[in-house]
Image: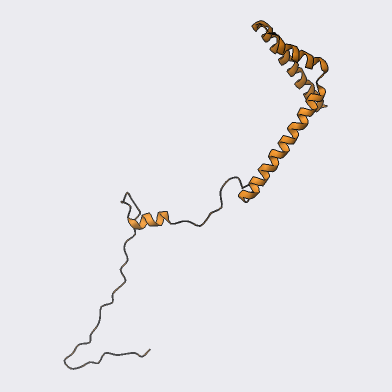
Amino acid sequence: MPIVEPVMGPTSEPVVEPVVEPTTEPTTEPSAEPLTEETIREATTPRPPTPRQGRPRKYYTEEEAKDMARLQRKQFKQRLREKQRAFKSGISELQLSAQKMLNKVVLSKEDLIRIIEIMENGIKEQTNEQTTEIQN
């Protein structure tokens, strides 16, 4: 870049242009200023997806989640059928006849309460037997 020196003439003074510094606006912290259109636009611009905090997703796609839910329902129904089959095979002929008789007879309130108590005690005994079998 060639260096240009001012030419001094007898009647002219050297011309010096003032240096203009770029003006910068002083930055202030936002303090209860009304929202401008720019700040609203900045707030509504979509952000790139950030990793979620907390528990990671179990399934990556919605289709995979639906397939797994379908499989879990199928397995649950299969286990339920097996439990019902095992229960029905354990029912004695006496229980079936007692159930048929109960359907034919009108019982008093006191009789129904006694039957319910007997059934609840039987359920408690069965669950106690199952828990002792599991512990052994």
